Image 1 (cartoon, rainbow, N blue to C red):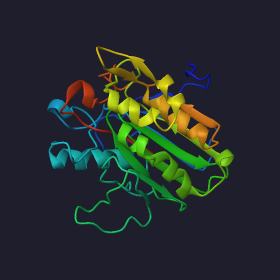
Image 2 (image 1 turned 180 degrees about the vertical axis):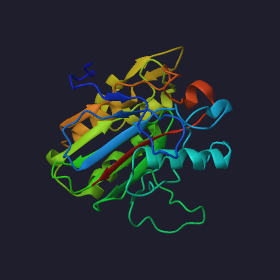
Image 3 (image 1 turned 45 degrees about the vertical axis):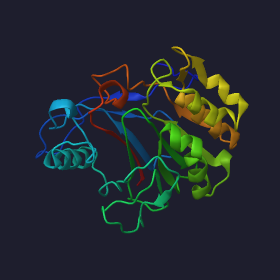
Image 4 (image 1 turned 135 degrees about the vertical axis):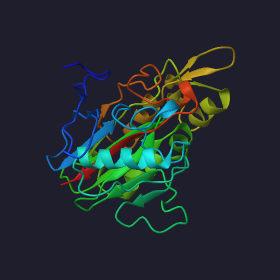
Length: 272
């Protein structure tokens, strides 16, 4: 089994999930290799196996990117049946903010989905989900398997405190939490301006380690390291994943930075 950058076991790549008899095609995904309780289940999808075409080719699960609505609905149906999810995922309208909602009680908004960038639950059978295509997805659970959360962490939400808000919402000691970081844009592809670097370094000088000089006055940012630093400052030690680059693997992942018009992968977590 491959080893991740911090020495944790590599995640399991699953191709051709066994599908229900009425579902055509084959889906693929990543299953975290982390010591979560047996009742906690998590997965991050890859782009293969859906019905979307054109720039969204594959299993696009984002309904806000310009894809044909019927294709997105079919892709979501295939996902739910392939994974035998206990309920439809609690989708969000993600806005790069710091709002965390209870997936079992998300509230009612005009779009049908709450504007939030993290979702958590303490209820069995409720599926937390976030969509990404370069931003960092994280899933969290406690060691007792009594609560889980999914987080969408772009650089804006990360700098504003979406991780801190999610940990606060989970309301358990930091040492009781496990975290897995899913596929995100890698440190050799994520070019940002000086203002992004300053948003982080003004609050934590140690975050300079996550920025390397790029072209002219630009920097290459390691969003996974920035998230790891914030988790560690909260006292969380059990951190896994963070080894997949969306930008450099077009056959497996959507990437907004690489392609512009593109689809979205989903990262999900739930308890049985």
